[in-house]
Length: 290
Image (cartoon, rainbow, N blue to C red; front, side):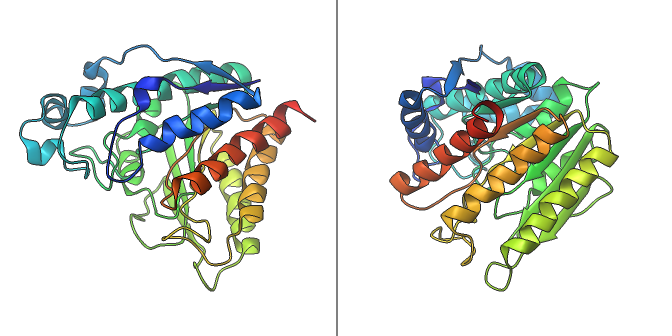
């Protein structure tokens, strides 16, 4: 079975459905019988103060000053959201441990790659991708970001952690700085095609192999789907499934431990949940049903 991190405490009410969808995905996944769920322990905020500016962490913990506490875009500040974000980031650490042990794992989570050291941004509170690099300093952590937007926060954290590499495949020119260990590959949302996307995935894996990565973190974003407000017109449900299959097959072929998270998606919740659950089904089929 797939090793999946989730807690009912991941849920929080927002104006974007960003946190609500996590519980909806877990509820849809549970009856399929393909996942073993793991509930993470409570995360110490001292760990987050090592990752981010302590002033920002304190602001998010207390709600004051409110402008800094809500800089990521979730307003008003509330303890439900705060505690959900803490649990989600605890799940990141546990999911990484499970990936090292089982080769494949997931955290039913999102909201990481736009958060920089000083503050959150664009509905990302703490950078739970960089958190893994911090917590596993003897491992080389490679992010394959397939969100429609570039991971600007992740890119910035590659300059803080030598064991961290970011590779963003994006359709919208937002959050796409490049550095020594942060690369981007643009596939145009209207003029691009899936052949270009496949090439980008293969290039990413070659980078990971050349860099001797110990773990791939796959941001399985759904905001690139053709029905998403941010999506690429050519990126159908079938091609999303093919994307996931290629990523999982390459990781399995090269025996690279992989953990995945949900990342972005902004269409109606019922359709969005089906897309996210499809990633879990593809992972199970690739690793356990063949």
